[in-house]
Amino acid sequence: MQYRVDPRTGRRLSVLGLGCMRFPGSVPGRPDQRRAEAIIARAVERGVNYLDTAYLYPGNEAVVGAALEHLGLRDQVFLATKLPHASCKDEADLDRIFNEQLHRLRTDRIDYYLIHNITSPAQWTRLVGLGIEAWIARQKAAGRIGAIGFSYHGSTGDFSLVLDAYDWDFCQIQYNYANERYQAGTAGLVAAAGRGLAVFVMEPLLGGRLAGKLPASARRIFDQAADRMVGEGPGAVELTTPAAWGLSWVWDHPEVTMVLSGMTDPEMVDENARIATAALPGALSAAQHEAVARVLQVFERSNRVPCTGCNYCMPCPRGINIPGCFAAYNASFAHSWFTGVSQYFTASAVRTGSPKLASNCVRCGACLSNCPQHIEIPDRLLDVQRRLTPGPIGAALKLIARRKG
Ligand code: SF4
Ligand code: SF4
Image 1 (tube, helix red, strand yellow):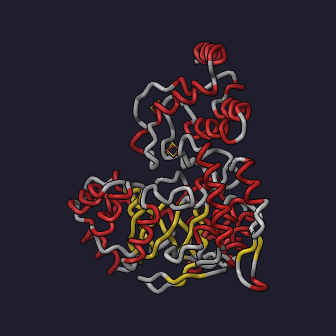
Image 2 (tube, helix red, strand yellow; image 1 turned 60 degrees about the horizontal axis):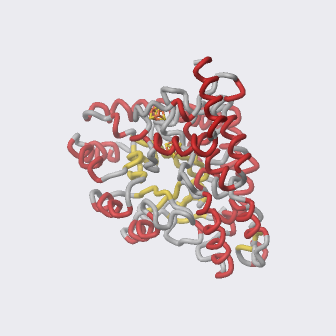
């Protein structure tokens, strides 16, 4: 495993962190304890020493806490979780939520604590009004918080305002080869590192859209690249998958301290750890950067809705599988129209005879403020309908939905 130093704390962090949000489970959003433990155990075995969860990931903190206790690994990892700031109406809420998190995680300290999903400087200003600065100072003094940071999904312009609003220890940004000028972007990465913060990266593969869901023509560019080795001498490894290319591209940046990957089985941990060992800063060649640029051109033609499948917008009161609809829509451009329709039928439960179609949307707006990608969900669901259930197909499905509904 490759380690990089957190410039604020001096801790050696594995460049590969385990993002726990996408732990597998038979029910979406409900992680399976046994499978989560297998992933955590393999990650630590491979040298990963950073785990990231959040209060808002359903059932996730409790699974992570139970796993670490059962495996006896709490002292071998740095544990990160996040404050759901919109739920905090006064200072007592900070204590109440934080204590609940410690209880769920079966620990007496959070090594890295984040204000979750900051999208504007005003959100931090509101928390300052609740007394969060003094609260953080008290938690740090008591050893209950090790380092304080924020995860960010706002605009490029607002990022520096949030950076300058407090003496942060670290920040967590969405960053990958398709998002150089999106949200914090490269400018934000450089600015944060320049201020001496540790920078953690989330969505390095856009929820798999730069990995297994990449269009076949883009995959071919990677597969046919003349130079597919990364690293030096006997430690060099071959970039055999789009995920390996995408992760290596992020690790190529010296400003990046650690990259979170939502690994969903032990084999994925093995593969990512293999690449992490060799993908040092500046390791990609000019020819490899050129291959990534060509893949990006292809990807952008299919990237019609920038949904990462994070599920923050769920559940929809009308039962619509919002990320499933957008994944199907994008697949209809990335692969074929028939692939998209087939995925849409699965996502909207058409074959059960009780479909939850995109047309079920009543524009209630409940999903909108939760989307970190700022997608106009009801409008984009109209696009899904138009493309995937045109004309008589849509009319027939609507009839079935009405009869069953
Ligand atoms: S706006 Fe539409 S998709 Fe969003 S929560 Fe309401 S019904 Fe569901
Ligand atoms: S629509 Fe937005 S909130 Fe919902 S899964 Fe996609 S990115 Fe996440």
